[in-house]
Length: 325
Ligand code: DGY
Image (cartoon, rainbow, N blue to C red):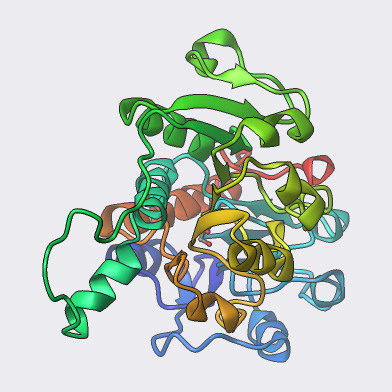
């Protein structure tokens, strides 16, 4: 029997990450990348010291209750950790860690793609080419809207929000934000702080959501809040689907209140609300904000650094405090 810590690896991870896992741990891999159901997660965890998981694995209090006494840490390959009941884990002395920071750039890049894709009607344009429907250039053909010169409202100014602000600044946007706490002036970098979403929304010609999903932010974007946005605003979500209420967003896209939406995340992924793909004014991607080789490797290494720290008796760099959830 190996004297290395036993780790259940719930999905197929990038090769470089699995090589390091195999070297430093007694790893139980999932080469087929089958998403395990709750029963399987509990069963496969039984002889383990650690779990390397991702946001498709749900760890409710009921499941955490059934994890073995040997388990010391759940390391999630994601910055979001709404899929893990951190308080329940903490009550059982199981450390939970995540991977902040390393994915800010990739997610912010994709956010700019969502903004441009929605504002410039990229889905419609691409479909026209692919379906052989493009007949000729015309002075009034495929008119979208500029993002440059527009006011961008960022809801949630953590690492990703700030990386979006830096990029949007380069596009000539005026940056406004709401965050639980106001940033220091150096981090604000000229962005204007709003103490409440209710003052941020009316000036947000483009609204971009970057808050974590918590009980406080779930269903943040209701029809009442959409009504506060300027006419023909654009909504962007590269954070978590459950920040919005699908039906309310769809209604505003249909009525013309909103010009467009650029979405990378959805409630109930991958079974997204069917109306999104019937609307012309949506630019839709399949939760791929962090999907670059460099970033997925970095997320994996960060998740492994967290495991290494636990088994070396150190506090892991990205331990999540139960009172922060
Ligand atoms: C994250 O890191 O939270 C990404 O959304 C992938 O789950």
